[in-house]
Length: 112
Image (cartoon, rainbow, N blue to C red; front, side, top):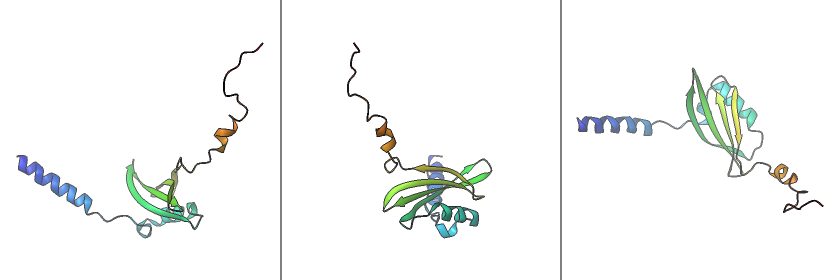
């Protein structure tokens, strides 16, 4: 019984590992068109494409780099609709956070 479990697990894992990676050229037309609209900068490059099911739809999770650094993660439905866009926190504009603290005093002071 134990050997049957080991053999079944090996077969399942080996088929998952042998799956062909998804490329931009192999994406469905609507997904590829939406991705082209997202990629406006010639410095941007697709580094990884994964899929997951969301109800009846297949969602393509696409990782994008800018100048070799992780930049953006886009989730596009198989219909071409952009479901979610996440900018990498390291490249996000953090000036807005610092502006609110510019006039704040470093320590509380008592009022007279």
